[in-house]
Length: 386
Image 1: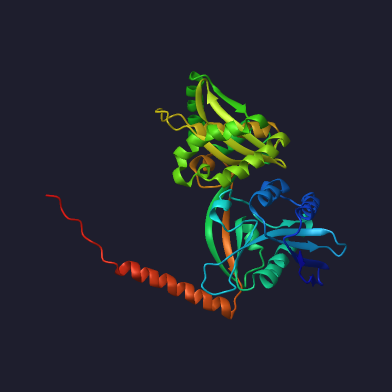
Image 2 (image 1 turned 45 degrees about the vertical axis):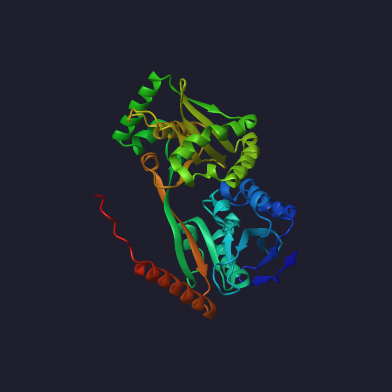
């Protein structure tokens, strides 16, 4: 275990250091202690982060900020991957991601450092600057998928930055409503309410919409039941084609179902399978993570996604949840049912120095060469059939 030289910020009396691949017991102790004082979401919980480390990560860097009393106030886990640059020393670094597509398909959202609630906006820029100066140096540092407001307080305005992915996220703020009917009247359009009523009426004729929850003994069955519909909808891009994705979520569900954090649901109407839902319940928020709906019905007025989420929002409101969060992805039913939206982005940051300037010039030249090569390749005209 290599411990870097501490860097102390005198104005805040905090010490920041990084440790190369510490023992997971130490990481868990620090993380769980701080999580109790942090406004964490499910993706920054030890439930998610600990499983991610167990399944995917062997080498990593733990960044730790401590108060002058030695109490952890900020934590982040950074993974290094080789760069595709021909120049040496340009590794890429990722916050709570691996940089490998098949491993990152689990898709962390609302990414950030784990930060003490009272110090979050003050700490984030200090941690980022420390990472850029002491860890990244000549490489790139990707942060995301994160709320735009988190990136706006990154403190990295003087660094080269590039947005490599973005989308909108949607949620329902259940704080606002005294009842579910109040939510419906204030948020849903007349057309949306009509579509939901019409669809529910038709499902009632099929036996009525019912939810069946999978217990820990049936987790394998859930993924087996869900897979055909998800594969039909998403094809090659479906996580059900990725054994590593499935391994991670199987382990997550084995932990989360008994704790009530993971909710695995079959949606049916009589003998008809309408679809499957995978949600998280964490700190007063219901997060919609994954669905697989049956779109083979010929009746175009059947709206399985709209009806299912409408009913789950009602259940969340009655159970005292503060939010029903659709998270990222610009789908119509999310826009229809939500009352709040926000931007999510993934950005790559680089230090501005001579080495990075040379690398960028080489990268741009390579892109230009590829474009010129592609555009100069002769195309053969099709021969007409006689």
